[in-house]
Image (cartoon, rainbow, N blue to C red):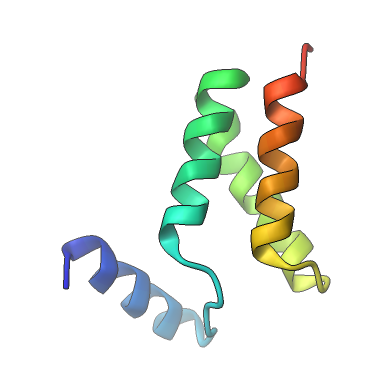
Length: 75
């Protein structure tokens, strides 16, 4: 188990939540947004993803949607 895997499991336990998405999905989304938009948008976008998941969205589908959105976004 890597440090990242340990952190993921321990942080989820600290918050009292179970995760249904692999960290790689979130890291890929953050990387895409950081490159397509700007770096500070990455953590903000993953927070928005969390809100969407809490409201019932599928995390993998929502991450894919946000990634595609970021690739085409021209703000």
